[in-house]
Each structure stands twice: as C-alpha cells, then as structure tokens.
Length: 85
Image (cartoon, rainbow, N blue to C red; front, side, top):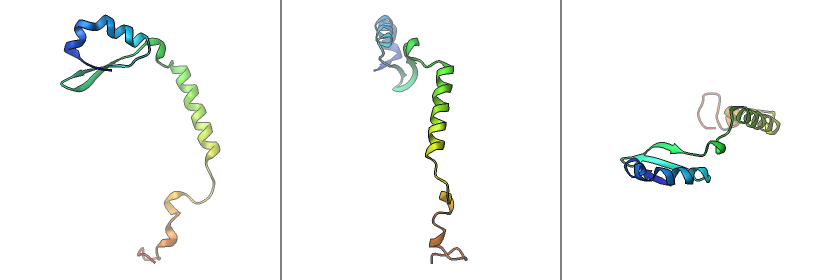
C-alpha cells in the first residue's frame, strides 16, 4: 500500500496496524517512495539472513558446472584475427 506522507499523519495508527498484520506500507513524498513501514517481526534477523545467504551460496556452488567459462564459450565463431569466421 502506498500513502502520501501528508495523508499518513492522520492515519498513522491504522497504518501501523496494517504493517503489524504483514502488509507493507510505503510512504511517498511527491509520488516518490521515501519510507517503508513493516512489522518488526517480519524483518529477518542478521543471523537468519547470514544462514540463508550461506545456503544459497552452497546451492549455487553445487549447481555450477566445470568446463569452459561463458566468456570463452563462443570463441569458435571468430578467427584468430577477431573477425567472424
């Protein structure tokens, strides 16, 4: 939900209730987002974030394939002088 800062002043209690319920409330000024209200319980603790990133790195490493890297995978299309062959 997007709400102008000027309008949020009068409905702060309601906006906080919505954030506590899990809804993301974005405060805007002149149509541009400037702040976000989210539930503290919904935010990820640093330790949990580190654990998640480590799991993603391990998963990515397991999926990586050995062999030519992508930068060299299309070298066969060009001659030694760099022109298309």
